[in-house]
Amino acid sequence: LERSVLRQMISVVSKPGILSFAGGLPSPELFPVKDFSDSIQQVLDDDPDALQYQPPFRPLKKHIVNLMSKRGITCTEDDIFITTGAQQGLDILARLFLNPKGHIILEESIYTGIQQVINPLQAKVHAVETDLDTGIDVDGVEKLLKSGIHPPFFYVVPNAQNPLGVSISLEKRKKLVALAKEYKVPIIEDDPYGFLCYEDNTDVCLRSLESDWVFYLGSFSKVLAPGLRLGWMLAPKHLIPTLTVIKEAYDLESSGLIQRAISAYLDKGIFEAHLNSLCSAYKIRRDLMLSGLEEFFPKGTRWTKPNAGMFIWVVLEKGIDTAELLNFVLEKEKVAFIPGYAFSVAGSDARNCLRLNFSNTQAEFIRDGMQRLGGAIQEFLDMQSSTQ
Image 1 (cartoon, rainbow, N blue to C red):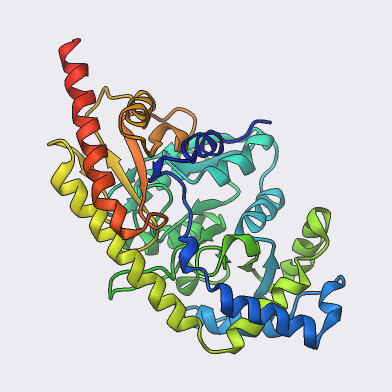
Image 2 (cartoon, rainbow, N blue to C red):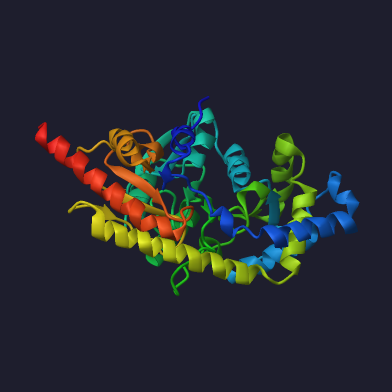
């Protein structure tokens, strides 16, 4: 087993003095530190047994039911399975569904967490393309299904996919759900960025289109703080006991203290205002980065225009190796990004692509960083041209 390329890179590009557009992190200055600190203290004062082993906290589940209604999803407390972060939920579902050396369909560039989950099981990956405007190639998925490939699940991040920042079109969402039902393949809908929406038209969740065949993964990491390590899954009630048995091998239970503290925080009725402030700040940062791409990046560069989330995917001209480019930019301008190959599944090639994160850089530094990055990329391209 090896650490993901992404994790290794982040440790390199996060050194002091580096202006980093690399990590997929929320902004720490926007964490609700005082309000959450008060919530933890309130729990410790009122319920010292919160420090004991505890079953899932039902008042928190009630809050999650309400949060899901804001995403257009109808569920009950009995549909909710508490996890220690969404990543744990993903790993539990992979263990439930995926047999060793089984076949799986993934997008060519995809969240490294799913790759880390399936790699120990030596899964055979069948890659499909992703349109930078409309998302996963659902026709390509259908073609693989018709050829006899029968994956144990579909994994998608429908809203502001990591690393591409692309949201799947409604037409494709409906077709993917229809394929799931026709071929009896459950969908894992990973939705860490769905609440971070910067446009008026909120995308429809797959779970709101279909409840029996969609397992929804949610998380507090991007909307409160990742250090809380708390998420949830929506799953059929009859599978909750099985999921519980699998989870017990990881950690017995998710932190009772954190569950109660988040519930106490949500009791205050201030979460919506906090979420609005996040979306306002991140929208400003996204727009600054998009403007920087338009103003400073080489002619012919393409990029996504995310309506939610934290990432922009940039496509440079063919033949450019962004791993080499990263070394050049770090040396010359001390600006960091993640090369596209870090997200590539076996057999796919994104060496001329890179991922930019806008959420974790304060607004006043973005324009300068983009000017330095764009100028360094142009210089790198000019050097490449002169040696050919």
